[in-house]
Length: 126
Image (cartoon, rainbow, N blue to C red; front, side, top):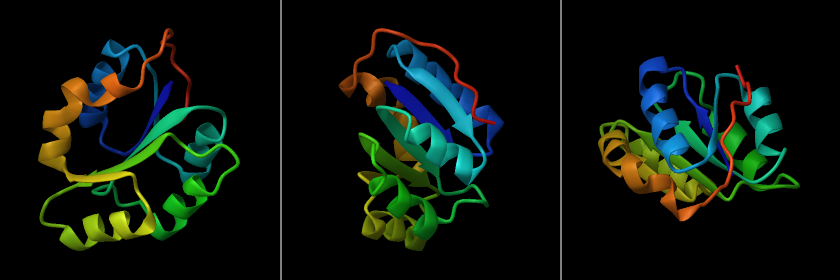
């Protein structure tokens, strides 16, 4: 299974990548919407949307992900707890899970355990 992180936070992405790889999953970080949508359509994946990223247009991304010919197994949005309106919007648009950044960080060690994979490789998505 492939974990796709849409974020421009390089430091945080290394933590997410580590958790994904420890669970046996492929990992890519995307910073462009078209690349995210392209990667998501290429096979089973979980998409993580960092709502603190300035380039996340939820009303554009989430509906396209959920209506693609190969929709993600899950779309998980996370962001600062003080951005309650963005978190609420993510839920209303159909994200599978929405959580505050701290909650997401605490869930990282076990987050990807529910999806199992036999291989881990690096697929570019810059």
